[in-house]
Image (cartoon, rainbow over all chains, first blue to last red; front, side, top):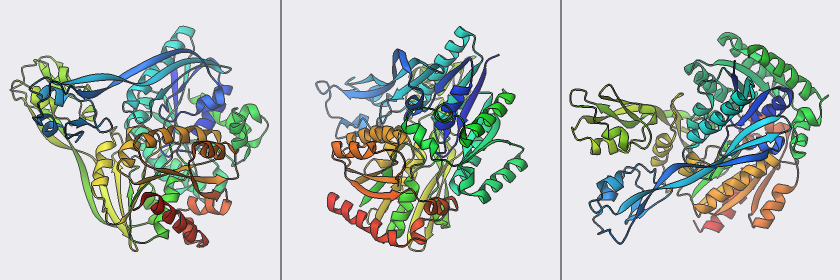
Length: 286
Length: 278
């Protein structure tokens, strides 16, 4: 049966992609899905060869036809997003709802579909990968995440693979919810900083909210051992398994500079050995 | 002046820079617009003096008036309304509060009700004022909370906005209207990749930019090459330093323990003022 694992964190920069990159190298018969569509990084480690590029059209933008407009200003009055000023549409503020077009008595406004990004289906040395690129500043990252996941599911079904490995975005909002909806397991990567702990707790509430089994991995655990103990105590109270404690090591940045998962770059390092242990525990849950 | 701090990639040190800058200059108001994971208050430990709920308006169907015609769901661009068994159903989490469904309903069967999606907190730390938002966990849409935080802006003060990571609409909503945007990056391939995308977004908004290189000394030199090619000024470099990392891990802003940095942040602020004529 197909199992889906999402890597998330709440706080950015805790090591989601570093971990996913190495998991991709350790996993077999797995489809890799980079669901951080507005600042994706996994491709920098896995070097995907793009096989298929899809246009993603989900956004709409209001456009005024000034040859029909009589400057009545009804559109401006009805726009809840304050996106119309002096009869000019501000593309940053416009959310494409269509109210202006509906209220315009002269039918002078139309909604245009805009390309808000691209989805890719690719091949890597570690298996098939689906990913995407939201155009800078765009909305609808959640819908694009869903497209990346659907592409991954299609490939998994097609090839008979039974794992989808999802690299999630930071935060807890729409793209994160899209990345974790319906997954079997959520691995929260945290760090022993007060901010990391605060954000991991919110990510944990999110997983509980969606009834997804949570696991925790503490990255750079030795930067603050006291805080790491606090995380472990908290997890014990909450009955969440701490499946990994990865030490701080400059080798992680070095491997990133070389464009390789750390486990490929330095397989015998302490970091890599701990990632291997973590992966083996995660697979027990899958 | 309104200064926003952004990065694209998470964990590069946006909040650290926002807080250390705020503690180095006078008459400051900090707006934490990372409402999904706000962290400024962890470093500032403010006395909270005002807490409010953030509401959005969502449609409510008056069932006895609804005949299931489907006009509302046909109009809704966000799939927040669905008509089944001759009645409309609302999916409030998907609603953007545009009010369109009410306008199109031929039976006046839709009214709006307030729905809580987060909270807004105001506090102070010494003379510094802080406003931050917290999106309720499970709610997908941070924008209304970010907008409510920004409504509290006191333009007569030195405003520092801490933005969320990423380059999508939450970032744009946060930095929109600022006089200058400081981009915090780390000299690694991930840092550079996300810096480039963020530069694109902020430039499109016609906001002048400068870069802070955090954790300088790790990684490679490509961030520096890129900034030179693009003529983006590097206004400050902060070395990778275990002491700074440890202070952060315990929720301490490093200027409080390493006061020699105060002057450096002041210099950056002055440089930015010079660039923006604020």
